[in-house]
Amino acid sequence: MEIGKLIKVKVGDIKAPECIVWTTDNLDMVDEIIKNYDVNISAIKISKDFKLIDGGHRLCILWEEYGDKHEIMVRQVPISQWLFYTILFTFLPILFPVGIFLRVLKQKKNKKNGIK
Image (cartoon, rainbow, N blue to C red; front, top):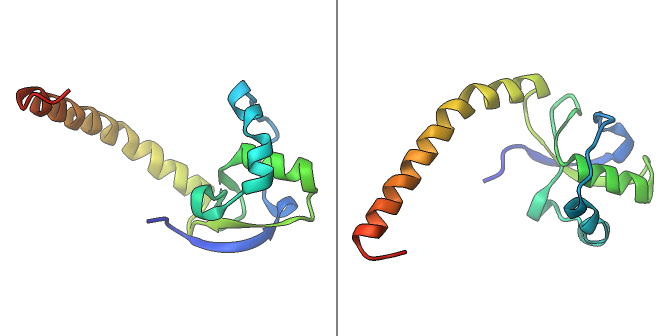
């Protein structure tokens, strides 16, 4: 379940950082993103104050291809960018070890049951 609502915004209205690091994998996705951007698969996420939270590469590709007046659907979360990252980095150190612990338990159970 995705948090936030889908809204239509102009690419240029989204406040995004200027520095984006491109890898070979990102460059391979350019044509696919231009032709198949779908909010139901992987929406660009912005905060309530229109700051970019997720999808910088997708946003950059769409901006370069269509310009800053092009309208796209994005998912807007109901909190500020600052609060989003504060929550994320507060709970990530707690959730990450729990996830590893659960994975190890699952592997032990599978090994016991003869499943690889």
